[in-house]
Length: 251
Image (cartoon, rainbow, N blue to C red; front, side, top):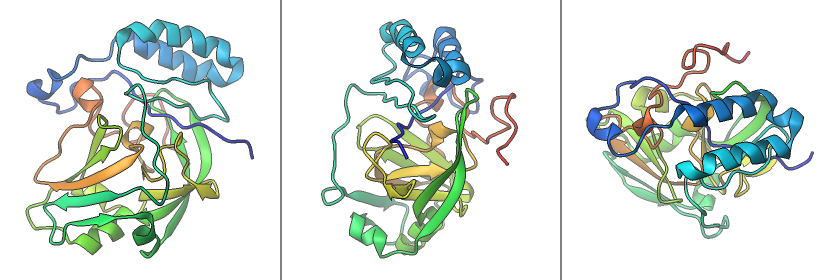
């Protein structure tokens, strides 16, 4: 199977519960970006790099996007920074702290010793394109939370990327779903750097922008802390089929 390049995804939407203070931290994504991304979602795979290059050129002055590469195998690759450090499996570490009983730093070997979960689930873009039946594997987030112990006052989980910029959050109930993974494998192999590896978040029932790449930290918090794109106007809850008013939920 040919290598595929993964994406970090977004759209313009209503406030979605984001405070005015949080919205002020970054300017909202404009109509020009949304139209460009909708065009890619509908036609990017069919027409290849030429369309992607035209959209890249249109988006470049906005300053919201980092690297945008041509579509490959249905996946796309975006960053919100100019570059992201590469970590090997041996070098990677993730700290889990905040409102937990036993803060801890995990390496790849530590994750491998925990119960492993595999899922065959779609990766769904909020702009409408989908990669079906992707094989994901790793540690179900509720199993990881059980190891560190969740304090009674915890209500949400915040995720940080080692790109130094990208963040995401889930409510504690969402984070305890069995189809939310700290993913270490994808399509039968390790999660590559371009796919967000060596470890990434995968949130099966939500659009792709919730599946944070280059996972570097997990923090238990007393409330949902809106993530990078939510502070720019995206839905805090990104349920597939309910968040953009256009898609049916994946079967």
